Amino acid sequence: MSDLHRALLTAFVAVCVLASGCTPAPDAGADVTPTPLTALPEPPPEPPPPRSFTMNVVGDIMLDRTVGARIEANGAASIFEKVRDELRSADVTFANLECPLSTVGPHSPREHLLFRADPRTVDVLLDGGIDIVALANNHSLNAGVEGLQQTIDHLETAGVAYCGAARERESSWQPTLFDVQDVLIGFVACTDLSFQHGSWCKVDSEMTEFRKRIAAAKERCEVLVVSIHWGNEYQNVPSGRQRDVAHAAVEAGADLVIGHHPHVLQGIGQHEGAPILYSCGNFVFDQREGERMESAIFHLQFTEGEGWEITATPVWIPLSCCGPIYPESARAAKIAGRIAELSANLGVSGTVLDNKVRAEIPLEDGARKQATVSDDQPAVAQSG
Image (cartoon, rainbow, N blue to C red):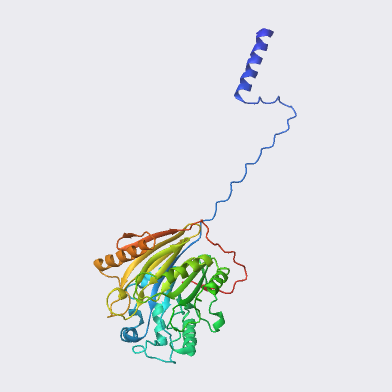
Protein backbone atom coordinates (compact mmCIF):
# COMPACT_ATOMS: atom_id res chain seq x y z
CA MET A 1 0.00 0.00 0.00
CA SER A 2 1.38 3.39 -0.97
CA ASP A 3 1.87 6.20 1.50
CA LEU A 4 -0.99 8.06 -0.17
CA HIS A 5 -3.37 5.13 0.17
CA ARG A 6 -2.34 4.65 3.81
CA ALA A 7 -2.99 8.34 4.63
CA LEU A 8 -6.38 8.26 2.94
CA LEU A 9 -7.43 5.13 4.88
CA THR A 10 -6.36 6.67 8.18
CA ALA A 11 -8.34 9.82 7.45
CA PHE A 12 -11.42 7.75 6.49
CA VAL A 13 -11.32 5.76 9.77
CA ALA A 14 -10.99 8.97 11.79
CA VAL A 15 -14.04 10.45 10.06
CA CYS A 16 -16.05 7.29 10.75
CA VAL A 17 -15.08 7.30 14.41
CA LEU A 18 -16.01 10.95 14.82
CA ALA A 19 -19.30 10.38 13.01
CA SER A 20 -20.20 7.49 15.31
CA GLY A 21 -19.51 9.50 18.48
CA CYS A 22 -16.89 7.01 19.66
CA THR A 23 -13.50 7.86 21.00
CA PRO A 24 -10.65 5.68 19.71
CA ALA A 25 -8.80 3.65 22.30
CA PRO A 26 -5.58 5.29 23.42
CA ASP A 27 -2.28 3.84 22.41
CA ALA A 28 -0.98 1.17 24.69
CA GLY A 29 1.20 2.62 27.41
CA ALA A 30 -0.25 6.12 27.10
CA ASP A 31 -0.84 8.05 30.32
CA VAL A 32 -4.67 8.26 30.50
CA THR A 33 -6.66 9.98 33.25
CA PRO A 34 -10.15 8.40 33.59
CA THR A 35 -13.10 10.77 33.26
CA PRO A 36 -15.29 10.59 36.37
CA LEU A 37 -18.93 9.60 35.82
CA THR A 38 -21.58 12.12 36.89
CA ALA A 39 -24.04 10.49 39.34
CA LEU A 40 -27.68 10.65 38.29
CA PRO A 41 -29.85 12.70 40.64
CA GLU A 42 -31.94 10.73 43.13
CA PRO A 43 -35.61 10.59 42.12
CA PRO A 44 -37.85 12.65 44.39
CA PRO A 45 -39.50 10.61 47.15
CA GLU A 46 -43.05 9.45 46.56
CA PRO A 47 -45.53 11.72 48.37
CA PRO A 48 -47.31 9.97 51.22
CA PRO A 49 -50.87 8.92 50.49
CA PRO A 50 -53.52 11.33 51.77
CA ARG A 51 -54.72 10.57 55.28
CA SER A 52 -58.22 9.21 55.55
CA PHE A 53 -60.63 7.99 58.22
CA THR A 54 -64.20 6.72 58.50
CA MET A 55 -66.94 7.72 60.91
CA ASN A 56 -70.43 6.43 61.67
CA VAL A 57 -72.97 8.99 62.90
CA VAL A 58 -76.39 8.10 64.32
CA GLY A 59 -79.21 9.94 66.02
CA ASP A 60 -80.80 10.00 69.47
CA ILE A 61 -80.22 7.11 71.87
CA MET A 62 -82.67 7.08 74.80
CA LEU A 63 -82.31 4.15 77.24
CA ASP A 64 -85.20 4.83 79.65
CA ARG A 65 -88.96 4.18 79.58
CA THR A 66 -90.02 1.37 77.18
CA VAL A 67 -86.46 1.02 75.91
CA GLY A 68 -85.28 0.27 79.43
CA ALA A 69 -87.97 -2.39 79.78
CA ARG A 70 -86.86 -4.04 76.52
CA ILE A 71 -83.24 -4.03 77.72
CA GLU A 72 -84.30 -5.57 81.04
CA ALA A 73 -86.31 -8.29 79.27
CA ASN A 74 -84.06 -9.07 76.30
CA GLY A 75 -80.57 -7.96 77.35
CA ALA A 76 -78.33 -5.11 76.26
CA ALA A 77 -77.16 -7.03 73.19
CA SER A 78 -80.69 -7.10 71.77
CA ILE A 79 -80.77 -3.38 70.94
CA PHE A 80 -78.07 -3.33 68.25
CA GLU A 81 -78.19 -7.01 67.34
CA LYS A 82 -79.19 -6.39 63.69
CA VAL A 83 -76.87 -3.45 62.95
CA ARG A 84 -73.96 -4.14 65.30
CA ASP A 85 -71.46 -5.10 62.58
CA GLU A 86 -72.08 -1.95 60.57
CA LEU A 87 -71.92 0.29 63.64
CA ARG A 88 -68.57 -1.19 64.59
CA SER A 89 -67.14 -0.97 61.07
CA ALA A 90 -65.94 2.65 61.21
CA ASP A 91 -62.86 4.12 62.84
CA VAL A 92 -65.09 6.12 65.21
CA THR A 93 -68.85 6.03 65.90
CA PHE A 94 -70.79 9.00 67.29
CA ALA A 95 -74.28 9.27 68.82
CA ASN A 96 -76.39 11.65 70.91
CA LEU A 97 -77.16 10.24 74.39
CA GLU A 98 -80.66 11.49 75.15
CA CYS A 99 -80.75 10.55 78.85
CA PRO A 100 -78.65 10.55 82.02
CA LEU A 101 -77.24 7.26 83.32
CA SER A 102 -77.91 7.69 87.01
CA THR A 103 -79.42 6.27 90.18
CA VAL A 104 -80.25 9.70 91.65
CA GLY A 105 -82.30 12.73 90.68
CA PRO A 106 -85.80 13.35 89.33
CA HIS A 107 -87.40 10.62 87.24
CA SER A 108 -90.71 11.08 85.42
CA PRO A 109 -90.16 9.66 81.92
CA ARG A 110 -93.80 9.65 80.84
CA GLU A 111 -95.60 12.53 82.53
CA HIS A 112 -92.83 15.14 82.51
CA LEU A 113 -90.30 13.58 80.11
CA LEU A 114 -87.62 13.55 82.79
CA PHE A 115 -85.42 10.64 81.71
CA ARG A 116 -83.02 8.72 83.94
CA ALA A 117 -81.75 5.39 82.63
CA ASP A 118 -80.30 2.52 84.64
CA PRO A 119 -76.50 2.96 84.56
CA ARG A 120 -76.18 -0.67 83.48
CA THR A 121 -77.65 0.30 80.11
CA VAL A 122 -74.23 1.73 79.21
CA ASP A 123 -73.63 -1.84 78.02
CA VAL A 124 -75.82 -1.02 75.03
CA LEU A 125 -73.32 1.63 73.92
CA LEU A 126 -70.43 -0.78 74.38
CA ASP A 127 -72.20 -3.53 72.43
CA GLY A 128 -72.76 -1.16 69.51
CA GLY A 129 -69.20 0.10 69.45
CA ILE A 130 -70.27 3.68 70.24
CA ASP A 131 -67.02 5.56 70.82
CA ILE A 132 -68.31 9.01 71.78
CA VAL A 133 -71.66 10.54 72.77
CA ALA A 134 -72.98 14.09 73.01
CA LEU A 135 -74.11 15.23 76.47
CA ALA A 136 -75.49 18.59 75.36
CA ASN A 137 -79.24 18.24 74.91
CA ASN A 138 -82.48 19.10 76.69
CA HIS A 139 -82.34 15.87 78.73
CA SER A 140 -78.71 15.88 79.87
CA LEU A 141 -79.58 17.49 83.20
CA ASN A 142 -82.94 15.75 83.76
CA ALA A 143 -81.46 14.06 86.84
CA GLY A 144 -79.72 17.22 88.05
CA VAL A 145 -76.04 17.98 88.34
CA GLU A 146 -75.40 14.88 90.43
CA GLY A 147 -77.11 12.77 87.79
CA LEU A 148 -74.89 14.29 85.11
CA GLN A 149 -71.80 13.60 87.21
CA GLN A 150 -72.90 9.99 87.61
CA THR A 151 -73.39 9.78 83.85
CA ILE A 152 -69.82 10.94 83.32
CA ASP A 153 -68.63 8.40 85.90
CA HIS A 154 -70.36 5.50 84.16
CA LEU A 155 -69.21 6.54 80.69
CA GLU A 156 -65.61 6.87 81.83
CA THR A 157 -65.70 3.51 83.61
CA ALA A 158 -67.04 1.90 80.43
CA GLY A 159 -64.50 3.67 78.23
CA VAL A 160 -67.04 5.71 76.23
CA ALA A 161 -65.92 9.27 75.47
CA TYR A 162 -68.27 12.26 75.68
CA CYS A 163 -68.49 15.92 74.70
CA GLY A 164 -70.75 18.83 75.59
CA ALA A 165 -70.30 18.42 79.35
CA ALA A 166 -67.47 18.05 81.82
CA ARG A 167 -66.92 17.58 85.53
CA GLU A 168 -66.21 21.30 85.73
CA ARG A 169 -68.86 23.31 83.93
CA GLU A 170 -66.40 25.83 82.55
CA SER A 171 -64.61 23.03 80.68
CA SER A 172 -67.72 21.80 78.88
CA TRP A 173 -66.84 23.57 75.60
CA GLN A 174 -63.40 21.96 75.45
CA PRO A 175 -63.13 19.57 72.47
CA THR A 176 -62.80 15.86 73.12
CA LEU A 177 -59.85 14.72 71.01
CA PHE A 178 -59.47 11.47 69.09
CA ASP A 179 -56.38 10.29 67.21
CA VAL A 180 -57.91 8.48 64.24
CA GLN A 181 -55.61 7.18 61.49
CA ASP A 182 -53.07 9.87 62.45
CA VAL A 183 -55.68 12.62 62.12
CA LEU A 184 -56.48 14.61 65.25
CA ILE A 185 -60.27 14.96 65.44
CA GLY A 186 -62.04 17.19 67.95
CA PHE A 187 -65.67 16.82 69.06
CA VAL A 188 -67.74 19.67 70.53
CA ALA A 189 -71.44 19.53 71.47
CA CYS A 190 -73.94 22.26 72.30
CA THR A 191 -77.64 23.16 72.20
CA ASP A 192 -79.61 25.87 70.46
CA LEU A 193 -83.14 25.61 71.85
CA SER A 194 -85.38 28.55 72.63
CA PHE A 195 -87.07 27.04 75.69
CA GLN A 196 -85.54 26.45 79.12
CA HIS A 197 -83.51 23.30 79.09
CA GLY A 198 -80.62 21.64 80.82
CA SER A 199 -77.32 22.01 79.00
CA TRP A 200 -74.05 23.63 79.93
CA CYS A 201 -73.17 24.47 76.32
CA LYS A 202 -75.65 26.76 74.59
CA VAL A 203 -75.38 28.87 71.44
CA ASP A 204 -75.85 32.56 72.27
CA SER A 205 -78.55 34.43 70.37
CA GLU A 206 -76.12 36.51 68.33
CA MET A 207 -73.69 33.60 67.88
CA THR A 208 -70.76 35.86 68.80
CA GLU A 209 -69.47 33.74 71.67
CA PHE A 210 -70.39 30.59 69.76
CA ARG A 211 -68.10 31.54 66.89
CA LYS A 212 -65.26 32.25 69.30
CA ARG A 213 -65.67 28.88 71.03
CA ILE A 214 -65.72 26.99 67.74
CA ALA A 215 -62.63 28.85 66.50
CA ALA A 216 -60.83 28.07 69.76
CA ALA A 217 -61.73 24.39 69.50
CA LYS A 218 -60.45 24.24 65.90
CA GLU A 219 -57.07 25.51 67.02
CA ARG A 220 -56.63 22.28 69.00
CA CYS A 221 -57.42 19.77 66.24
CA GLU A 222 -57.20 19.17 62.52
CA VAL A 223 -60.80 18.12 61.86
CA LEU A 224 -63.54 19.60 64.08
CA VAL A 225 -66.94 17.92 64.51
CA VAL A 226 -69.70 20.04 66.07
CA SER A 227 -72.88 18.41 67.38
CA ILE A 228 -75.85 20.75 67.85
CA HIS A 229 -79.19 19.97 69.53
CA TRP A 230 -81.56 22.33 67.74
CA GLY A 231 -84.58 22.87 65.53
CA ASN A 232 -88.26 21.99 65.85
CA GLU A 233 -89.50 18.55 66.82
CA TYR A 234 -91.06 16.41 64.07
CA GLN A 235 -90.26 18.90 61.31
CA ASN A 236 -88.29 17.42 58.40
CA VAL A 237 -87.15 20.79 57.02
CA PRO A 238 -84.47 22.68 58.98
CA SER A 239 -85.42 26.12 60.22
CA GLY A 240 -83.73 29.31 59.16
CA ARG A 241 -82.07 29.50 62.57
CA GLN A 242 -80.61 26.01 62.10
CA ARG A 243 -79.08 27.03 58.81
CA ASP A 244 -77.69 30.25 60.26
CA VAL A 245 -76.09 28.43 63.20
CA ALA A 246 -74.71 25.70 60.95
CA HIS A 247 -73.13 28.24 58.61
CA ALA A 248 -71.68 30.17 61.54
CA ALA A 249 -70.14 26.97 62.91
CA VAL A 250 -68.54 26.13 59.56
CA GLU A 251 -67.26 29.65 59.01
CA ALA A 252 -65.67 29.56 62.47
CA GLY A 253 -63.89 26.26 61.81
CA ALA A 254 -66.26 23.27 61.94
CA ASP A 255 -65.52 20.60 59.33
CA LEU A 256 -68.67 18.56 60.04
CA VAL A 257 -71.94 19.57 61.74
CA ILE A 258 -74.22 16.91 63.27
CA GLY A 259 -77.78 17.82 64.25
CA HIS A 260 -80.25 16.24 66.69
CA HIS A 261 -83.59 16.96 68.42
CA PRO A 262 -86.28 16.96 65.68
CA HIS A 263 -86.65 13.14 66.06
CA VAL A 264 -87.08 12.82 62.29
CA LEU A 265 -84.63 12.99 59.39
CA GLN A 266 -83.91 16.39 57.81
CA GLY A 267 -81.44 15.58 55.05
CA ILE A 268 -77.81 16.37 54.23
CA GLY A 269 -76.67 19.91 53.54
CA GLN A 270 -73.27 21.54 53.13
CA HIS A 271 -71.52 24.88 53.52
CA GLU A 272 -68.05 25.72 52.25
CA GLY A 273 -67.27 22.04 51.73
CA ALA A 274 -68.39 20.93 55.22
CA PRO A 275 -71.28 18.43 55.48
CA ILE A 276 -74.27 19.37 57.66
CA LEU A 277 -76.46 16.50 58.89
CA TYR A 278 -79.33 18.71 59.99
CA SER A 279 -81.11 15.94 61.91
CA CYS A 280 -80.08 12.31 62.21
CA GLY A 281 -83.48 11.36 63.64
CA ASN A 282 -83.98 8.74 66.34
CA PHE A 283 -81.84 5.64 66.65
CA VAL A 284 -82.87 3.96 69.92
CA PHE A 285 -86.28 5.23 71.03
CA ASP A 286 -89.89 4.32 71.79
CA GLN A 287 -91.92 6.93 69.92
CA ARG A 288 -94.98 6.35 67.75
CA GLU A 289 -94.81 4.45 64.47
CA GLY A 290 -94.07 6.41 61.28
CA GLU A 291 -91.28 8.77 60.26
CA ARG A 292 -90.17 9.13 63.89
CA MET A 293 -89.13 5.48 63.88
CA GLU A 294 -87.41 5.62 60.48
CA SER A 295 -83.80 6.72 60.46
CA ALA A 296 -80.35 5.94 59.05
CA ILE A 297 -76.76 5.10 59.79
CA PHE A 298 -74.65 7.84 58.23
CA HIS A 299 -71.26 6.46 57.18
CA LEU A 300 -68.74 9.18 56.33
CA GLN A 301 -65.26 8.88 54.86
CA PHE A 302 -62.96 11.88 54.97
CA THR A 303 -59.91 12.02 52.70
CA GLU A 304 -57.33 14.73 53.23
CA GLY A 305 -57.28 17.29 50.42
CA GLU A 306 -60.35 15.75 48.76
CA GLY A 307 -63.39 15.88 51.00
CA TRP A 308 -66.22 13.71 52.26
CA GLU A 309 -68.07 10.71 50.93
CA ILE A 310 -71.36 9.96 52.71
CA THR A 311 -73.49 6.82 52.61
CA ALA A 312 -76.84 6.78 54.43
CA THR A 313 -78.17 3.29 55.21
CA PRO A 314 -81.88 3.29 56.15
CA VAL A 315 -82.99 1.68 59.41
CA TRP A 316 -86.32 1.16 61.15
CA ILE A 317 -87.00 1.06 64.91
CA PRO A 318 -89.79 -1.41 65.78
CA LEU A 319 -91.35 -1.03 69.23
CA SER A 320 -90.88 -4.73 69.80
CA CYS A 321 -87.16 -4.11 70.40
CA CYS A 322 -86.81 -0.28 70.36
CA GLY A 323 -83.52 -0.71 68.52
CA PRO A 324 -82.69 -0.23 64.82
CA ILE A 325 -83.06 -2.99 62.25
CA TYR A 326 -82.74 -3.04 58.47
CA PRO A 327 -86.23 -2.59 56.97
CA GLU A 328 -87.69 -4.67 54.18
CA SER A 329 -86.92 -3.42 50.66
CA ALA A 330 -89.99 -1.25 50.07
CA ARG A 331 -89.61 0.62 53.35
CA ALA A 332 -85.84 1.00 52.85
CA ALA A 333 -86.47 2.48 49.40
CA LYS A 334 -89.00 4.93 50.87
CA ILE A 335 -86.57 6.10 53.57
CA ALA A 336 -83.70 6.41 51.09
CA GLY A 337 -85.89 8.37 48.70
CA ARG A 338 -86.89 10.75 51.47
CA ILE A 339 -83.25 11.36 52.48
CA ALA A 340 -82.30 12.02 48.84
CA GLU A 341 -85.21 14.43 48.34
CA LEU A 342 -84.58 16.33 51.58
CA SER A 343 -80.88 16.60 50.72
CA ALA A 344 -81.56 17.79 47.17
CA ASN A 345 -83.71 20.58 48.64
CA LEU A 346 -80.64 21.55 50.69
CA GLY A 347 -78.38 21.63 47.65
CA VAL A 348 -76.73 18.21 48.02
CA SER A 349 -77.28 15.68 45.24
CA GLY A 350 -77.51 12.10 46.48
CA THR A 351 -77.65 8.95 44.39
CA VAL A 352 -79.93 6.12 45.54
CA LEU A 353 -78.31 2.75 44.86
CA ASP A 354 -79.29 -0.53 46.51
CA ASN A 355 -81.64 1.43 48.80
CA LYS A 356 -78.77 3.53 50.15
CA VAL A 357 -78.06 7.20 49.56
CA ARG A 358 -74.58 8.18 48.44
CA ALA A 359 -73.33 11.76 48.25
CA GLU A 360 -69.97 13.49 47.82
CA ILE A 361 -69.00 16.83 49.33
CA PRO A 362 -65.59 17.94 48.00
CA LEU A 363 -63.41 20.43 49.78
CA GLU A 364 -63.84 23.80 48.16
CA ASP A 365 -60.17 24.79 48.20
CA GLY A 366 -58.52 21.37 48.53
CA ALA A 367 -57.27 22.03 52.06
CA ARG A 368 -60.06 23.60 54.06
CA LYS A 369 -59.08 25.31 57.32
CA GLN A 370 -56.23 22.89 58.01
CA ALA A 371 -55.04 23.74 61.50
CA THR A 372 -51.48 23.67 62.74
CA VAL A 373 -51.67 21.61 65.91
CA SER A 374 -49.04 22.01 68.60
CA ASP A 375 -47.08 19.06 69.95
CA ASP A 376 -48.22 19.60 73.53
CA GLN A 377 -51.81 18.45 73.11
CA PRO A 378 -53.42 16.64 76.05
CA ALA A 379 -53.95 12.90 75.97
CA VAL A 380 -56.55 11.87 73.41
CA ALA A 381 -58.92 8.96 73.16
CA GLN A 382 -58.04 6.20 70.73
CA SER A 383 -60.86 5.09 68.46
CA GLY A 384 -61.94 1.50 68.31
